[in-house]
Length: 234
Length: 273
Image 1 (spheres, chains in turn brown, purple):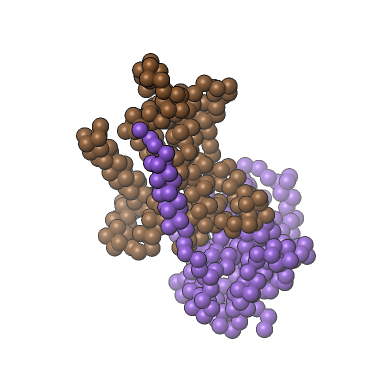
Image 2 (spheres, each protein chain N blue to C red):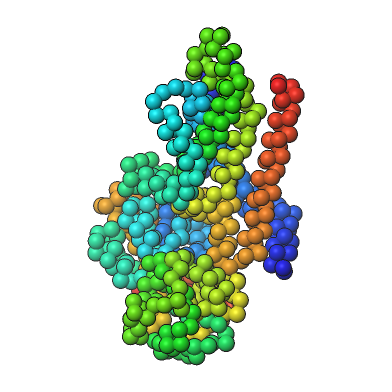
């Protein structure tokens, strides 16, 4: 039990001391995962909506595919992006490996299926409700998809948060494509892995509880914003 | 209604986020190295001095020696700084590296339960390993093609233990870095071969202590190699060479010797002058 109480004490001390290096690491974690989630929403939400209202061959297969890809192993995505961005790989000339950009790419790939699959579910429920209405207005399916996305925007925030949660919590992909370089690509999860390697378990757990607190805070802010937005524009 | 304009605005926001997340252009080289140099804290001690002297930042990616060399083979590093002479010479012979220079050494130690159930304690690494095998005491292996793993396999061979035959539940192949393997050994109260630097900076020791040390066979040489620009044209040859010249210079060698944990020196500079 001493290890646990030690780590909470360490966490508290780190926060109180407003450790500059820790702040930089937290900030980088947030930037990378927020950017990845935003990209995933831009790509994944339209895909999800089209999968919900569209009628085209292979639609069912695509739905199963995206549902399945929600379980993509981060290490595999990391390895894939590593081989793509490596100097010997097809995108090697851009020199993106071991940069935050590489980490954003990997996390965006990881998160897009989650956003797409959850969006599809939300939009499909709306579609069954408003289908006749939209039809009678003569809306095309693409138009209907866009309308339903906007209509379900508050429910869709959950899809975005689920994606963000996945991104900020994963370590396998960012470790491989970022390289855990001190001051450049070291984020919360890779720092925790590193301190665990060094056998400093209380510090590792302290960092872990800070990460959880940050994620909780973001969810609380998102929830409050959603409530506020629903009252004003709902 | 989602309009094309709001969609484009979101795209722009993503681009801005992505751009701010990547650091401004700075002068840097990428060094692929081993977990022992990074986790022992040597680089954190060494690199600020080099950066101050040269204005070049060093980005270290810490992996096992085998992986570190592979990373350089793919062209993803400018310099390799590792510890497996045979593998390093092969790397140079294949044309991936220009020249191997020796930098420093430390030594391996056998870590194990302080009660030493295998009675392996002493100075003789080969005898120690034989006794661990004979008593089937739990032994944790890195199993990750790192320099330490390669050394461990050499010692078993020299001790006359045929691992393929002797392997059993007592021999745990963990496929992990030095730190995680030490964590495993600590929780299983097992024997393990470790480099002294990582051991000294390792905190979660449990009941483990040093069992075998001081055998000349346990000597662990580190080398540094510039990746060959003929294979990978984007290699930062000039800046990479500057780093190599610095670590083997009197100044760099002194900085290595100065690094201590709890008053104990971790690495012993021995570059050819």
